[in-house]
Amino acid sequence: MKKVFIGILLIFSCALSTKAQTSRQLSEEQKKELKAKMEAYKAELNLSEEQQPKFEEINLQFAEDLSELKNANGSKLSKYKKFKKLTDERNKKMKELLTDEQYKIYKSHQDEVKKELKSKRSNR
Image 1: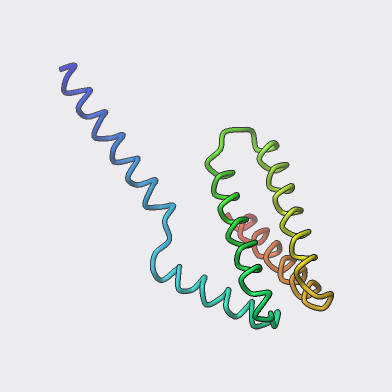
Image 2: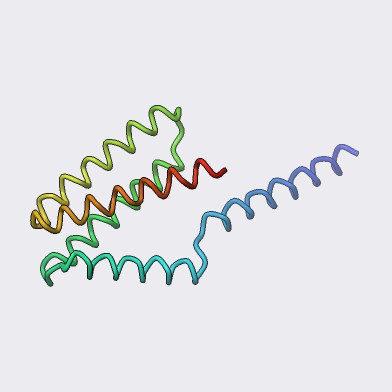
C-alpha cells in the first residue's frame, strides 16, 4: 500500500511539473504574434540601423531578468521592488539610446501596456 501511494504521488508530481513547464512556454502562434508586435513597435519608433541591435539587446536582457524574477523566491513586495528597479534601469538605457521624440513614443507605449495589464487584472 505504501509503495502504491508513493507511486501515485510520484506520477502526480511529474504530471504537475510537466503542466507547469508547458504553461510557461509560448506557443508558436504566440511567438509569431509577439515578434510581429515587436517589429511594428520598432517601425513606430523609426529606429536607425545602429539603434535596432541595442534596442533588441536591452529588451532581451529585460525579458531574461523578468523571467528570473518570476521564478525567484520572495515576497510580492520584494519582487515588486526588484521589478521597479529593472524597469527603471531599462528606461534609463532607453533614454540614452533613443532620441527625445522616440523616447516619448516609447513612454506612451509603456503607459498603454500598463493600462492593458490593469484592465486584465481587474477582469479576473
